[in-house]
Image (cartoon, rainbow, N blue to C red; front, side):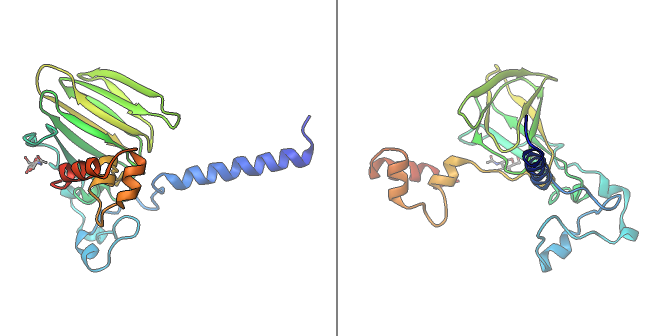
Length: 223
Ligand SMILES: *[C@@H]1O[C@H](CO)[C@@H](O)[C@H](O)[C@H]1NC(C)=O
């Protein structure tokens, strides 16, 4: 039986964990909406979202966007193209804690392993067949073949990929619980950083030679 003092400590630890979890998601808005003023952002860079456009000048179109209406070209080495509607391309999303990305995929197209530091990702396949997988923090891979109108959830911050395993083109939308989920792609974050990641870090990380690291760097230099 836990003593009163132990129970008090446990309660405090639980409250602290809840407070930290609260800080990890986008903050709750304090007004109906705050259409992002992208113009203002050019003079004073935003720290946490954009300043609000004056309420009197907000119009219907501020809540509407064609940002992901058109298919994007998949004519590139990965056969994939992501079109994002985040707060910076759809200012009406500012402070609302949601955003969406459209991903077009050629047959065999791959959205390489990456993660979103600020959001979970709800995948909905609208065309074709996409194999989606994510890796947990104990390196367990969870993966499913997802077809039209089916869903797959990638928990916040975990590394994941999407591969078109169908016969034709594929398209899915990814919905995020952040207006700006961010994206970290380890291949780029290691082989295409500016300035370059130290050679010794890469040879030791991959247990490999400088020649192989140089070859990898040149493959990713163009992106
Ligand atoms: C993505 O699609 C847009 C619109 O079709 C195109 O301008 C852009 O070059 C494409 N990006 C890549 C990496 O293929």
